[in-house]
Length: 190
Image (cartoon, rainbow, N blue to C red; front, top):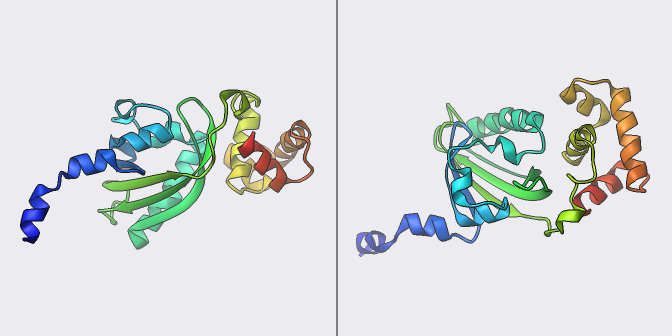
């Protein structure tokens, strides 16, 4: 009976029609994704297949540091979960819950399955971060959103902590807030 039921399940269709975003990856390259994943990142499944996850991160540094951090966790536990800021194909930054699993803990990024659930509400394009910030402000904002301190952001970007403080002060003024948590909230809600 159990084998008969399993034979009737179309796993490929179940993956494609799942109500949460899913992607299968090999060495951080997307090999397959479902429609919900494509919808979250505002694209079509074919636009993601054969590409890396890098363009879905706020910056190249975010992509690299996440790979190192997550790889270590996958090696140890085979599974990973967190809330993070990612970037849609149209450039909008948003919060997403990410869960991942590796089939190959000795080479953690070799064969992985990822599940994405959007946490932030959708915004009008005119209210997005990308349209109102300079590239350097975007880099610093993304690191602040990730919870980095000014010194950590400076180290990640290869600039001085003083430069980060200058840009952070500009962002605080631009968004009419007085502290970093309020700035992060404003950046994420437009």
